[in-house]
Image (cartoon, rainbow, N blue to C red; front, side):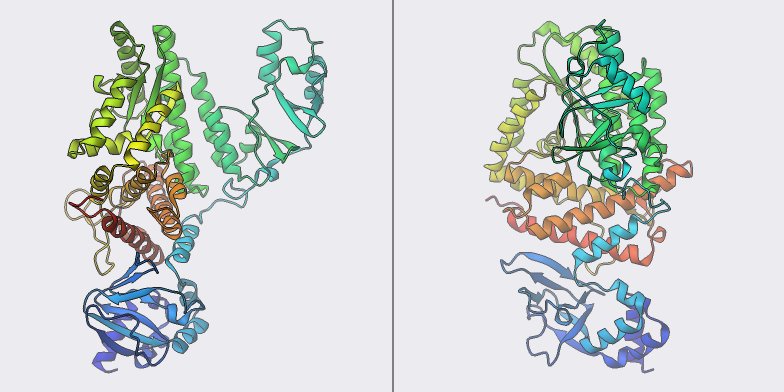
Length: 620
């Protein structure tokens, strides 16, 4: 083989998807290819191309833009452009070399021949980043879990028997007898097909026996009317999360207004991921900080079980955040038992990953107190004691004190509503570095316990102010661009160098955080209220901030990176090691590395787009 052809072969062998080709096919490939050089600024693909080709970037870079001129992809060393060989070859886009660029060209007929002769090559070859990320996430979720995993099963499939129902005028005694005969722990109260309420064993104890109500009274006097229901097609994991968040053990399954049946925590216990329901239940029954700390020790095992049952990052974040919420609420209840009721209304708010429902096991704390403006000076002692009790308790439970002291025990973050208004007015009006750092924390807040109206009022005002303040948004955008994905210009992974985590990828700071920051800026720019990253991306899709496709790609990238991170941490926890965010590339298959590059590439592209909308040093 000539030296030039051997060099092409070696280059292809080092890049996907050509590394999937057997030696014979790889050896024959260079002779089918041609070489093309593009000067910077020239259009791509070359308008004078004599045929349709697969283009492979050997050196240089190409930028691809949509009809509106928005940057949608960047090609660097080893990247492919196959649109000329696909069914949507006529799709509208514009592209040009952004550097002097050297290309390898393979005729589309040669590409199709390779795909037909090598299944592994064909499986790796898709036509878009969107498809590759979707495939990557599917691969990442392939675990040892059986077909009954709650990630796959639907709520309707979990119904063990037909619904056990009574009418509203049935006696409590007859309902209890029916529950005993049917060996169920609850009964549905219906009017025809319409669900009116629910009675559980707990209701019989607390609302009938303990309250001294006659067993001959109608069930409508003790039934629960605010019943949470789910549809038959709801994934089992969502049913689990609803039970966990609401601290309930029964969920009616309804198809429209028609009752299909009931699923219970007992139905879910057959699946590994059901542990979250019981953990939250134990937390709500705990009578001391010591008992809560003991319950919290089960969180790492919960993370391991969820991940190896097929959970993605969003599944894990929902479960762990629900447990942290339960711990926080129970600590507040224990504090109020000792201190007495609060003198005025308040909201205990969580920040950071807990607020976004994106936690992994035992992260550090971010929280604050918003207190009603009727607070008097002497009330400060009560709230200080409350804050220290909860913060100390969370620390005992493994959620360490915030290194930046962003906690309710810090007087600065334990203030009446009027002071919080002043804080946000200053941060939005004078976005200096400290204000930007604090904005990144306090624009992600969620009420865990107390009066939701206190935070809702604050957020409504802030949404109006941020949406109309181009200078603030420009500063927030610059802050969001500080954490670039670890992808070199030619799509090589940029690893941490030196120190304890030498030659690893920081999946949190360089992967998860950039997406969180982008989604936050989109939310502030559009004036929308969700704080969860996926919810923010979905709410702002097809807005001025981000296209529908860009939002979907960014969500897939976020989920893929977060899932790799969760799996890495689960492996560490199972091995008895402390969980961290540093992944060595050799832990990944070549296919996973390729998908990870796609995910980082999506983030880089959307960061570039944000930088162009809010140029550094200029305000719009």
